[in-house]
Length: 103
Image (tube, rainbow, N blue to C red; front, side):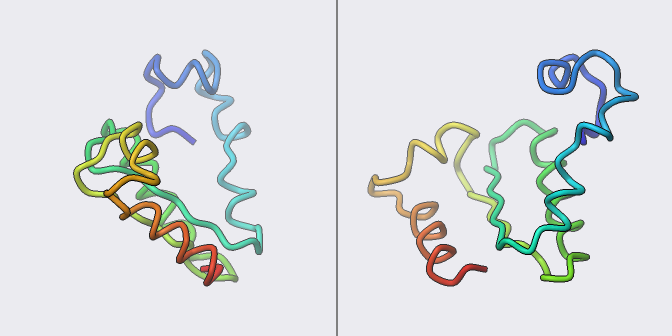
């Protein structure tokens, strides 16, 4: 659920902030037993970092424990994904390790 009703969220959630909670994926993410990993980047917009922190903290209340949460330094929302299969193996290594460990 967005921390703000700013117009950028309207693209995803619609114009009525009162509906944001019911459209949130957070309840399902917190009840699943599937191992989860979330990634944010140091240079992401502030709202992204807030959502990352909220999800990371909330996940620790899951019966299955905290999800893997990775904050990728020196990257933005797009550059983190574009770094996969390049000399910058930080995110790729995290994904491989997560897939091997399942946590």
